[in-house]
Image 1 (cartoon, rainbow over the protein chains, first blue to last red):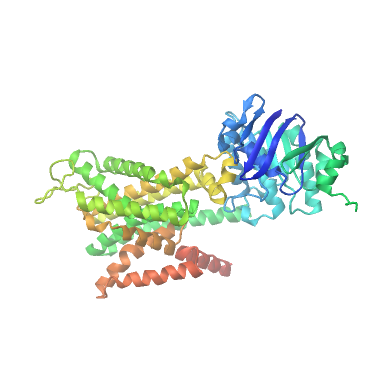
Image 2 (image 1 turned 90 degrees about the vertical axis):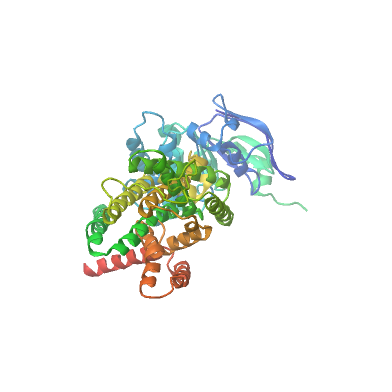
Length: 238
Length: 328
């Protein structure tokens, strides 16, 4: 469980996150909101790239904010970025090995873990292909595989569906949807694709101008008038 | 596809082994004594150039203090030679380790910098060493810690198996090959993966659990180690080192030639060493002013930056690849 209490972040005069308090228990939780709502800031605070002005984040009894970013990764927090990040001169397997190098638990069978995750994301026959030869979807899958390979506890995905075709998003949906069952990690999914959020997230939180304006079962949240106004837009009555 | 890439890998290894074998067995026999000395120093500078290449290709970091670190390695090697009766190899190792440590200390403040600022800092470090070297000179068997004697210098020992110039050339080639292999092993293993990740994006590397500071320091340290080995070998080759041989400008020149040779490939470092030491010597022999080589190096750098980002080594390897395709 991720317990976020009174989390606030300011960038100069801009309030990026405003007193967010939320307990996240579900397997896959969506984070939506218009551009600039603070979604990526939330992920950056959780992964350690932004220091909050106040507030705490407690995950299974661990004070997450006290750890340096790379130590959070080793503890079991994996994340992907909006812009896909694969090291071009490394092969698919070596890109994934980086996580095994740093975050594998002692006694973990690394080759078995690698093969399992390659199978899972559908890159089993591309292990030795250098990353610069991959298409955007394969890069995204490589990044996801790197996130998943070392048995993470929490996976933060920042718009993984961006720039993918419909067929590719279908594949992504399967991959994200089964993370908890296969790898046991809790997933926080940011995306603008409401269909993707609807199909995999049991609960969803909505941010707007740094405030948490709704949190609950995805269907309910998407019907909420405030959410519609903030995110989907409402007609202005004159 | 796997079989082909495996075959390519193997043929590359054989090409490298063949090249080394020719250098070790044939070269020392066919060239005369002056050229043995020139080649020895070219071989030695190859290793230092490989250190520059490592930092630049793996992390995109510009190191303009490599020749100064060669001087540091040489100073420690000479100091140890006159202070203790250890075998050459042990002195070489200690010199390299201490130089690596000094390289690491110098890299500490530079950890948060990149590009031009890092280049400037390393250049100032090189300038600092230039001043220190001319103030304290290199040990030559005199008394005291600095060990500078004005008359009757002592004897710099060479390895027992490589007393003659020819044997020392072979010896240097083998040491340099071992150094390059050490760095190559890093590239293929865990540090290489971490470096590639850092080069792509430091945030991403951290998110993957990589300790960015540690691995950057590691790369600096390894590059310093290679410079230290170079310095130690150079001390053995020349027996006396001159403070005037390690000005800051030489570090810039060696960096530029490493770019011309091609970063990220051992052949690039070999070409850099060759250009740095052999070309001026050839000019001297045929009666042209050796400074003219600087003009040629400048033109070569311009050429490399504009048309050959992988240097001469990159051009050669694509030439061989296209020849290989034609022959099929």
